Image 1: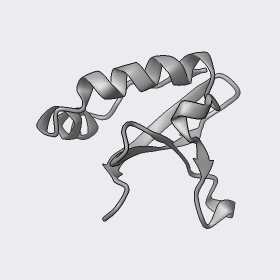
Image 2: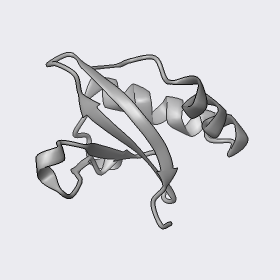
Image 3: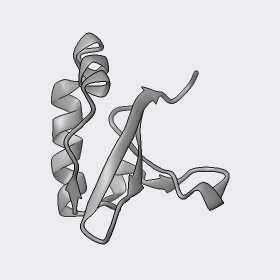
Image 4: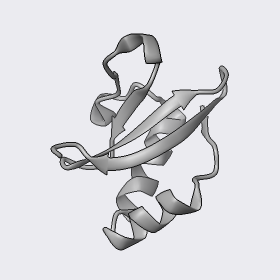
Length: 82
């Protein structure tokens, strides 16, 4: 599985919150196994929207969609608790 290049706004968000290293670590795990237990990958509600998320750390999650069988696009990284 491959993650498409991130939108510049997402890149800025990661940099401002010092999440770049954590995101890159989780990205590597995701690309090897998108359903690795440490990612806590889940389908978000409403399920018909087909938006998924994986854990960046305990506070932040990356929202993504499957573009095809080989590629996903990260739509945003956000604070899971806000």
